[in-house]
Length: 113
Image 1 (cartoon, rainbow, N blue to C red):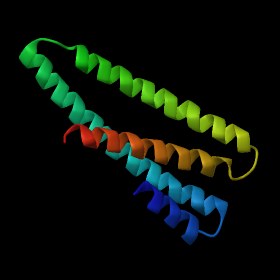
Image 2: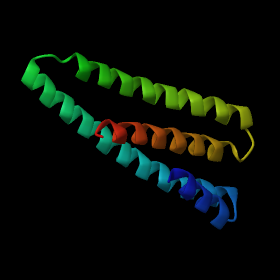
Image 3: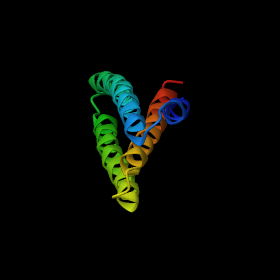
């Protein structure tokens, strides 16, 4: 899904600046969607901890989410730095960010199945 929306930005926008602005909108939407799934998982794990008295899975999930945020930032930043100062560097960063965020959303979505 993220790929399609990124492709829409790239095919319908005329300039790098327009593509970048379009990707900003997708990035914000994906951040909100991810936060919803993270909140859902925290809620489930908090309920479990309240029932069984063990918080280890909740603590580890929170750690994994912090690690994901750090990984995503570093992984996308090196791609940005590789291209910088080219005008396409922000676009590369945002595409990376959107893609990794979508992968994390899919991972969290599949936990409920």
